[in-house]
Every structure is written in structure tokens, then in C-alpha cells.
Length: 195
Ligand code: GLN
Image (cartoon, rainbow, N blue to C red):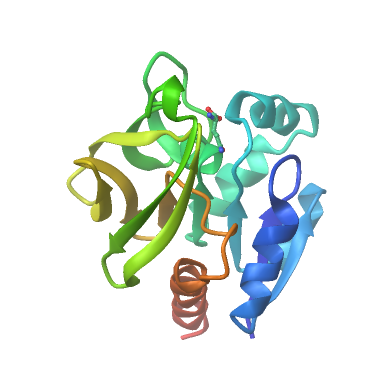
């Protein structure tokens, strides 16, 4: 059985935990570095990436997060979490910097701070209700990155091997299919480790 962690320094933690549980898998909030050892996959929630980075530094999490990635364990960044995963951020130094994408922050304009859109997400759902809140988008993706969804020609969901990222908040509706997709990634990664 796999267990999934949700980085609990800031952001929509409880909703992510509930979403994972709806997929029939145990989820725990990660507040201390040691707790990362207990989980097979990690969700980096939305919130505010610079605030989250400050907390990552304050609690000395960066080394452990990079190690988690190096071990090949799946990581799912949503909104601010996507920004944390990106190797390049326009106008900003990268944070964890493991996914071969360039992101632009707050890139859907001020007049549409928040909106909902129905997305076609490859291998996930033909119509997925996505909630965007001051969302980033993926401006450029490396050759190994699989683009899973676009909204108005902008990449809003992508996967690169063990890394999954989306611009929106998949935990805020009752549709748990993107979370379920990540849960499958975690199960597959764990099965491979056991062989
Ligand atoms: N705009 C935020 C940032 O730059 C992300 C918003 C979100 O996670 N809902 O970190």
C-alpha cells in the first residue's frame, strides 16, 4: 500500500488529503522533514510560491525535497507547487528546480484573478473542472515533458516522468481524477522499486 504526503507549510493541504483519500489511499500532512521518509509520493499544494519558499528555508526543507526527487519518488505540484518544481521561472530564481519547464507566474492577467474552465486532460478526463487562482502557466517545456492539457493555447498541465504539474487547483472540486492519475504514478513507482 502506498502513502502520499502533502507538504503542509502553507496552502490548501486538507483538501488535497481528502482528495487522495477519496482515491482510496492514505495521505498525511508533512510538517517535519523526517515525515518525508514515510511517504512514497508528495503533493506540493497551491498557495504563494515565494511565501512557501520562505517557509521551506525556515524549516530547512530544501535539501530533503531535492533528495526526495533524486530518489525518483513522484511529486505533484499544483499552482504554486508547479512553480516550486520548475527549473525556470520568468524573472525569478528557481526553487526545487527539478522539472524541465519554464513557468510564468500570475500569467492569466489581473482582471481574471480566478476563473473556472473545463479542460481536456490527456489520460485523465475529457472534461475536467479546473479552478485557476492567480495561476501560473507553462511557457516552455523540455523534450521529455509530456503536455497533458492546454487552456487558450497555454500549457496548464504536464508530466515529466516522476513529476506532474498543473496550473490550477485540482483539489477544490469533487472531481478527483487528476489526483487519481498521480496516485497511479506513485503506485507504479513503488512497484518498480520493489522489483
Ligand atoms: N500566484 C501564486 C504564486 O506565484 C500561485 C497561486 C496559487 O497557488 N493559487 O505563487
